[in-house]
Amino acid sequence: MIALTWVEETQVILTRKDSRLRTAEDLLNTRIGLPRYASKQIDFERAQALHGFNHVLTHHGLTLDDVRVVDIVNNPIDLDESGAHGHPARNEIQALVNGDVDAIYLKGAVAAAQQQQHGLRVLFDLRSTGIPELHVNNGTPRTLTVSRRLIRERPDLVIRYLAVLLQASEWAAENAAQTRDAIASETSSTPELVLQAYGPSLHERLRPSINPRLISRLNQQKTSCCLMAILVSTSRLRTG
Image (cartoon, one colour):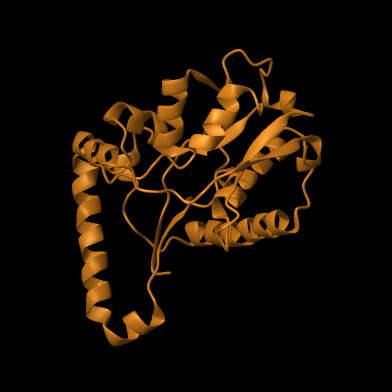
């Protein structure tokens, strides 16, 4: 790990507009949908969603024992006819729309886009807690990593790459609208959805750094996400 960034990415629990759920406390005894990729050696999507739910539940005095997990089986994403990837959470969204589950976890521009497209309602957004430790998940903080072999044999390439990222972050800090346009293209969304998903200060948060506070949160990410992965692999969840 040679650098980190911290982007305030929306992480939400979504439900249907007609759902009886009104607050996160209402998740008690409900069905939460978790993706399952049986063919993956490490099912990080499942661990990520489980981690998000765990943060929300513990923040409201509940635990994973207070909900029932519904597995939503997914296959690896195939390329569609246009060459673009299919939607990574399409099965979870369909299960929610169909009423097979009561709530799902999504993050980033995907969450904003699907909420808009399917008329879903945000039951809880982890950003609203104002507690950075509750925002830690698979993509928060974001890491810049390099293999030991590359940094040993071609440190010039590593330096060049990092220098370009630093230059790009300086450009972004001065060009908020263009930054949102670029990220909208990358996430197959719109500048408006990027603003909704990442907030108005996104363009100021892209500079890589070695901040001790972020390193501490990375250690939290490593520990907690590993625990979620173990929980996933041992099936120690209330299902039904």
